[in-house]
Length: 244
Image (cartoon, rainbow, N blue to C red):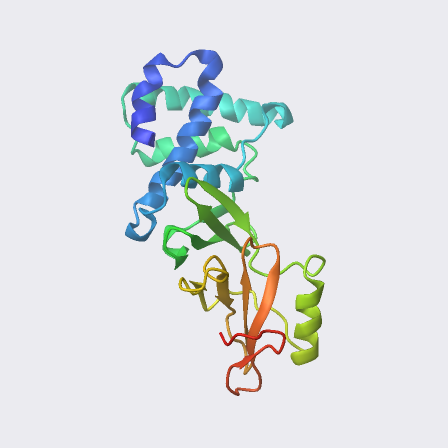
């Protein structure tokens, strides 16, 4: 499904289903925007659709004020005309659609720009940077894809779940803190080594003269692999027997 195919079905949509129809159409326009970029075509549309829904969840109608409901009603009248005329590319229609799905004008300020998406591992790991147009703040999302399923993950290990990791990190690099940047690189483990093949290796974005490499199977439990201190060479963490 894409926005154009859904738009064609407008004539069969009942009044009671208009809210869900316009919401789905809005999400699909965002998917279309992302898929317009060549480096994102490799992500299945259903995965992108689920991702868009997660970062831009539907606003419950019951939370709207009388004023906001009036904004939505006015937007719907305009949208009905655009859809009847199949005028789906009109910028005024797009504005009315945004007003309809977010009449409060405060929920959908975060925008994911396709050009800011970084392919860390093709078909497996991506970073998405959202820009909050109201506060000018940025937030980085990481999408981990496993065939038709995806999961928003945190690249930075959770201190509560990774006590050993942070104990080793504090011992070796006591002043290290994770930078708020997309990691320098990601790679899979050695395919020739069965016990290593499924690991994801992350090299953090270097700030100053220190950097680290760590690995995970599930983006929840992490193992500290190696480090670079004071601009020196990469050194394996001592608890590892194998050189990485």
